[in-house]
Length: 204
Length: 204
Image 1 (tube, chains in turn cyan, blue):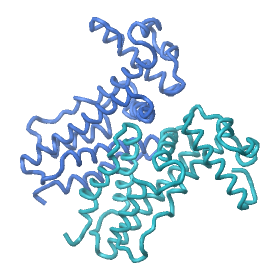
Image 2: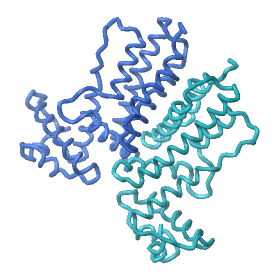
Image 3: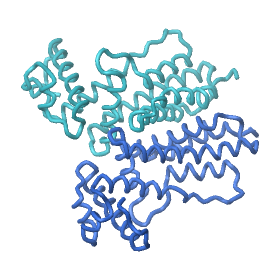
Image 4: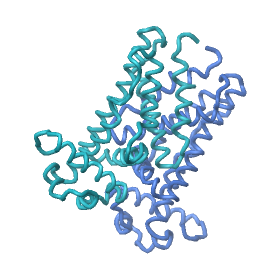
């Protein structure tokens, strides 16, 4: 992103551009996307895009960060919630998403997974995804560790289990999008409970 | 695929075309691939391709089937192997692949995962992937059921566990390819053992 003074109106403008990018991507797909498609989806002049972003690539990297940000920090659980409740809330957030005014969780995830598939050829996107993965996994690992410390979870390699859960979430979303398995998130939720989380309990 | 008499030489020709497709895809990627790129990668004339396939799309669907076939039926375990040994062999096959003369398991998986990402827009590819998924999951489910029947595995929903393992395999391969996590397959192998398969044992 180009330099700006970070004012409220700049933020609004950037959000307008980001949502226009969503519409343009939904219509044209990643590979065929042109800057003018984004311009066609908003009421501001195209020059505004060029003022804020150094070309399509810079814009798409910022867009990816924008999509990811919407999934972070929005999990709300009571401060005194037990680790299992918090773990459930975090997994649900990733699988089923928060509510959005425009574009559903699945519209957003379709774009996210399309960019993920291209990340092998794209160092900057790869880096953004790697950071996001590390944060998602980290937030799950943290709760598992808290549960172990409190004695409500048995001793496990929390990093390894956090990675396993993160992978299951990703695979379920990808399978719903790529193969049309509408029930993949719900089924995966049950499988995580039954085969992974239930075995964590020290009381059973 | 167009009609042919299924003779040995036809099969050889098709294999030459398939391997040329591999080379062309590795060089140009799926979206930019042209029929002439495939022609450039083989010593036969391009007319041979047009004789066997009705255009790029038909060829790529056959190619996807060709890649998938290489992963099927090649797991070898002793006829009297216990279910856990057979399960391990099947999972290893999917994660680490059989050995190939040309193009490694990961070259092949890179193409497989690229086509998977496009399957959302492509009914025929989606169908091929769905069938492949059902077979992979089915072969894992079958072994879990055999183990339950023999009493070496505890009673679980075998379909659900088979899906969970299939998803973990897919996510680990995808993560290695997209994000460069070289250790993802080995780490996933350990996580499957530790958090999923070990809990199946009735003797522990």
